[in-house]
Image 1 (cartoon, rainbow, N blue to C red):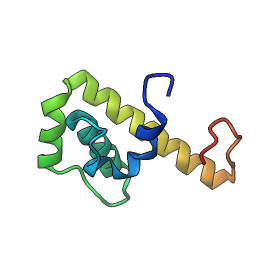
Image 2: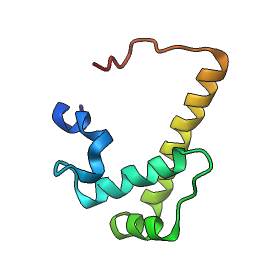
Image 3: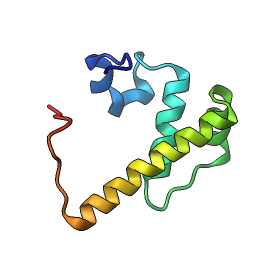
Length: 91
């Protein structure tokens, strides 16, 4: 939220694809991150083309790295039984 996202927008992330709160670029980035995250799912050409409409090559690399890092952390923490430390309280 420090970067400017409102609480209302954060609450709508799950519904980003159909929410008017998100720009087309944000919707493409979220769909891309979700595709990277889903086990067994690949980023198809249509989705990648959509992402390229809104982001430069370095931005796509950064977005991919950020999503992959969060996926790594999720798998790593789960495997070791590391639970949330209370830094980000979701309600």
